[in-house]
Length: 206
Image (cartoon, rainbow, N blue to C red; front, side):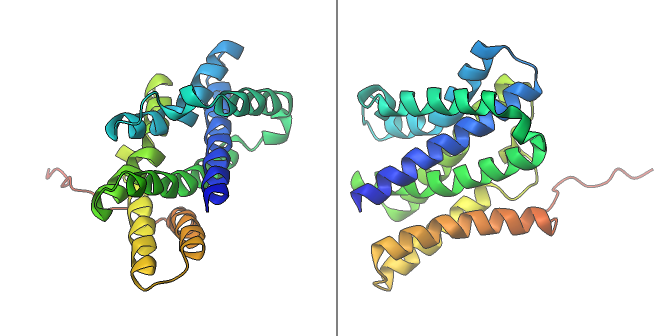
């Protein structure tokens, strides 16, 4: 399973780095700005996760492969930016892939630290969401997680189903991949069918 965890972590890093590149290019940032936004998006959630569980130095400081992956991803995304002309669609897809992968990566890290399943799900949700929050704040956007779209909810449901499957003694590898795919599927379906959380604000009466 270690190779599966590593593959999910690296794929999540690539997906979020690309989503950061897309937002940065949409804001017309220079190459340095693109690199910073891509890096913050890719490692922001993992950094918060590692700090919370006391895993320091954080992962990307101990293993330079994450830095190399980000640099390579930024270079390729910039070179082939014309292929990503459908910016909003590309951003949505890579962001969705990223949250699916990072949710389960964060949960696995929490389990490794001996945390309760509920805390592991919270940790996975933060891992998946925090990089995007930083990206959007730095680019002067309201973070997606704070809008009414289904985002963090998808992470929570995917994590809950993962633990439910483990409780029924379903093989860990299958449960892990299923959790990732469920997060992605929930997010895709919610956007496609315009499913959102209820608005808590009442309409002003005239």
